[in-house]
Length: 138
Length: 110
Image 1 (cartoon, rainbow over the protein chains, first blue to last red):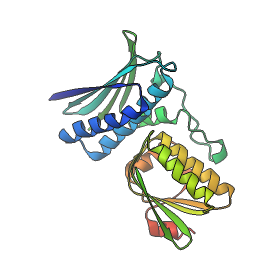
Image 2 (image 1 turned 180 degrees about the horizontal axis):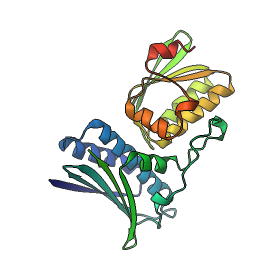
Image 3 (image 1 turned 30 degrees about the vertical axis):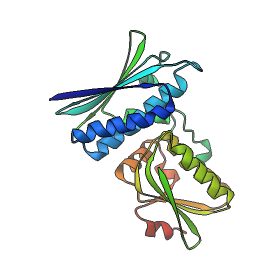
Image 4 (image 1 turned 120 degrees about the vertical axis):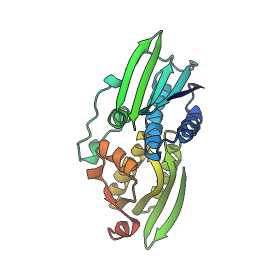
């Protein structure tokens, strides 16, 4: 079995609502368990907000495609964007062990959550596009 | 997301409902500001009906804790689902927050 579906959005943070509906619709139709759906939604929120907020020069219009692929063993999301080149898999690991709350920073935490929560987190630069792939096994 | 506010004794209970993501975290932050401006010092954040939280929401949880500590108050989070606990654990937030299984145990912390 291999089923896939693609959504394309503009680089506007308000478009993320569309992505949530798209992922929820596709995953529930394919019988994915709720915990995995929520993990995918968190990862999509982190990656897309990062791309939209930091990947484009001010005022530049961009397109981002989100492809969902489900097989018997796993579900994959491929994000393809025309933002500036950036490999999130190489982002620095944030300090998560400091118990002094005044020193705690949120920067970098989102990508780190994706890294920890997903079974696969890959990046490639292809035809002037960033292609980010995340996979969660069943 | 939606936030239903309640009160138990002198404790403000914020029932967080739905999803806290990059867009809805702004609403969560507004509510936090409102509660702090009102001078509330005892707050429970009830996550029983919260489906998930992303890092933009974690920022607000952290702001809440810092502000409440500053005024000598107390913040307790209760009834987290596995996935919310997982996000807190990955982020190293578990040791810095007071977290309980249910609302009764949260109330007992005050």
